[in-house]
Image 1 (tube, rainbow, N blue to C red):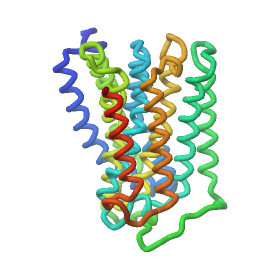
Image 2 (cartoon, helix red, strand yellow):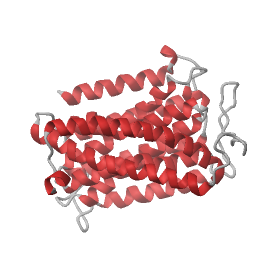
Image 3 (cartoon, one colour):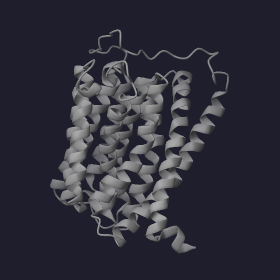
Image 4 (cartoon, rainbow, N blue to C red):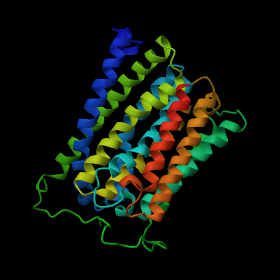
Length: 346
């Protein structure tokens, strides 16, 4: 029984776990999009802030568990690669969701100051992680000081983003801009009590946590029993599963017309995934997680920074229609991610 809980599992089991967890994650995430849209209206937070915080937390739970479990299992490169690989794959989710929004480029329709600011916060968090990796290898009680700095940056960023009483920058509304308008009380599902919506929302979150633990054990099996490098497993396998909740919820939200929620769920989830490095640093007992990262993990961090910058460019330029119906940013996101995975595989 202990082997079943701690692994490593047989290779065949691990492959099955990846497939089953991936399917269940997609199904659960589609339902999360419906619940999140309604709860954003009930709480009065709006799609951008609710999506970035609550959606970000729930969709990042599996990644948090994966990072913590692999760090505790003395697999620091796998833990680091999962956290940063999830960010890269989730950023690509914007381009995937864009394909389901036919009227205009998704970044044009989802104009939101909050989404732009969350992108800036993500760049800052990834930059601090890189600075920690190249800085002195010091820890306090086994934790690198950069972890505390990243936590403070995230909390401070949330306060700045939520204080929107007099914004100094606003996106120009066009005929293709989808405004975040609360649903009418009589809309389908609108009569359910908020407690029931929250209960279902948290129940799906618990299943996401369980799936994250299963994926972490399966990933250790891939590293131990195949020749696949940890950087590729963390970015190309764990990162993709890590990104499935954001991808599925983003597509489902776009199909519901909640385009701001779709973008916010991805960018907000990415900020929390950057904090996965803090979780991994605390869980890893072999020193600083940032200094345990190898060249592949640092290369992946740089790729995530490039992809985030491309996404921010798309949100600021707001190209209505562009390359291959995705806009310049969507095409570049696919190109950068594909190139990164190919390089990590070899």
